[in-house]
Length: 240
Ligand SMILES: Nc1ncnc2c1ncn2[C@@H]1O[C@H](COP(=O)(O)OP(=O)(O)OP(=O)(O)O)[C@@H](O)[C@H]1O
Image 1: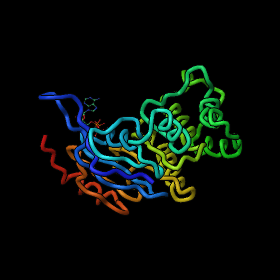
Image 2: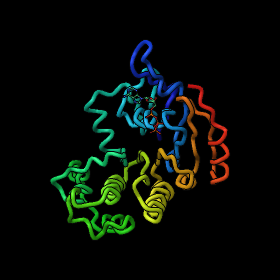
Image 3: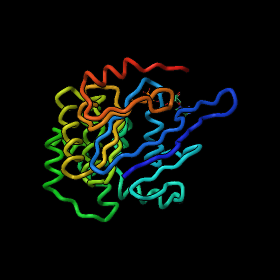
Image 4: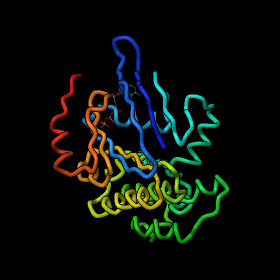
């Protein structure tokens, strides 16, 4: 569903240049839930942005939902993202003048697609924001805003969902509900989930964990457990 080959991203030039992603090749199957882990600065967010077409690689290729991103103009890329991709990022990008519910249904409205009210209610209830739907973002806590962004990403049933630290601002119970929701989206709706996290407990919800170090893939775990993740993370050495 998503794949990349020899992906490289360099920021800046000369002495100030930073190679954030340094030759990554991997793929993410339909219905697979992958967590990306690694030390701060190891390139996790940059890799995710490249895979999502939010940033352009210095070298290498990305294919998203069967389409090579390099061949797309801005308009085609925007259409592909709107139709096939959901985002759960740290910046929730909620529109301040709209209510939570209006924010959640906005992508469907923009695409001219009908809103399944039952599904909306189910997703909102599972994320524990069912009683906050009439509120504007400024009237919601950070964690509630995050869950509104998650509901917005899941409602359209995109083929691929990118999540950047989705449990960061949540209490443990709500975080688990969110992770179980992502796991269900992968298992039941065959959505491909790609999640960056620092939280090993969160990563155990994934089918596999990619561990990055210095912009490269350091290791890959299938059917990860807390123990196996902690063990690999402890083995990561950072050279720069
Ligand atoms: N726009 C940018 N311009 C210059 N350097 C950047 C830019 N974005 C990221 N970097 C650098 O690229 C490297 C990888 O950053 P990235 O944000 O991908 O890491 P990360 O693993 O997601 O880190 P964290 O866990 O701290 O969020 C870092 O050294 C960072 O300083």
